[in-house]
Image 1 (cartoon, rainbow, N blue to C red):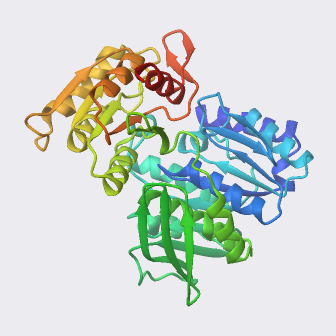
Image 2: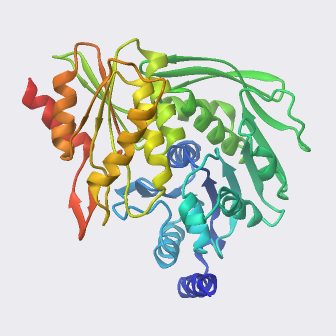
Length: 422
């Protein structure tokens, strides 16, 4: 009955806006992590090649060069809002639309009626399990994006993910794969991009891509190995749209870090770095910590919480355990409690810090409800060269609390605290 309700709304939205996606080449990006960054990289490549492109992600909207912040706290917009955006893109003369396509959005039929031409799979790890009731249901929801191709579009899949075979199993006119590990992956159609070597730096990365018997060199301003995967996905999209490799190389080299995704705030007076990232599930959080460890020998001071509203309670102690494993100091704080008791959420994160057998015996941690005070404590603890990993909210400009939203921006608060300490 609920599915019927969602489907009816999706049909009505498409009819009301006259099926706008029929006038666009729509690229959908799904996966647990990397969707937002990959979407923005695709936008950059297509724009660099001369196309007018629309974009909708969990943090931003774009129609050509016009851009504005997504304040809805929805990764994929509701049926009517999404169709309205697509209509605006079509009217503005966009040739492409890039849509962050989430499992929850698919579950609610927000993708229904959208004429997807390209489907991109980044990775899959446990997330939103309570909403989908099982990991298998979660995976199958993601798979519906590829089913929407109806065997006619282009599928692009991360070959290094253990679930790659499932997504490659859907019919497509062309199948592309990318990765670092599966050099002998057997694909029906030989469209593969493989990393032959890479180097990570404090301000980006360099990597070599093997494609069609040749090797191409790339530079990016994005941090961490996981962002190389995001770059690969975007490169594959560009090549699938017949864009020259040189144009793709230039586009990626120009790309600036996406707001709130491994965003660096540096205090030169104290030689202190704050890295702000949206990571709010175990896989994403470990990626952030690994990226920091691969770049610097400095201590990590972790500031984190967990989202409320009934979302994936099982992951909370896992987040705490990861912070305990990688950071010298851990500060557990409030994030987006919604109607839940924020202290209870913090207690569940703390359980992972306490129970992690790998944590250092002399490791200290703090429970600070006020997120601003938590950031202040992190700055007080930091020594020259240390890195504060401020995770969970990224570039969001509000915090979801009981009764609604309150203004909040991790990046703004971090800068304010640093200024006060100087």
